Image 1 (spheres, rainbow, N blue to C red):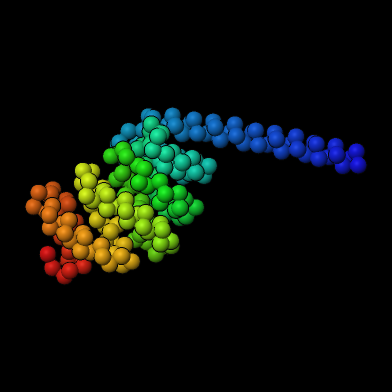
Image 2 (cartoon, rainbow, N blue to C red):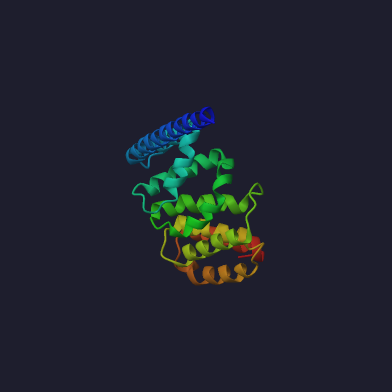
Length: 208
């Protein structure tokens, strides 16, 4: 009995050491990633270098997801920039994070974060590689509608329209809702939104 007890005690001590070491390494990696994000600029060269770093170290991927989906993180929008590039290269990395992504999307408020997150949302709804639950589709639809009718950047609104276009296969009522919004805003919209609107109308109504 004594031997058995000593064995478990030593085993527990070893496990505690491993957990402590893992936490230390994770904390250090998170600190390093935060530092790199702080120094990351909007220049493609800077963003690409950080994207390559994340892809070279798998443990960085989960940390990046957490930072991108945390709207309270001060470098949240930069994390979103890099996450977009990472997923454009390896979309399969999104699989374990679909639920949390859909849940957090509406909490993203920084304008520079919305566009890359909208692009990721479009990837989710447009690729047959991803299977979304009805509740996840609902979350994406609600968020896209909010982007479309509120004063957000045009690039985000364009992706919102693309998201709703894809989701209209599940929610056909979206077609008339989007057509109404397009009709109201078309004349005063910027050319990029007008072109995206024309694409939407041609796809679903046959002519502009």
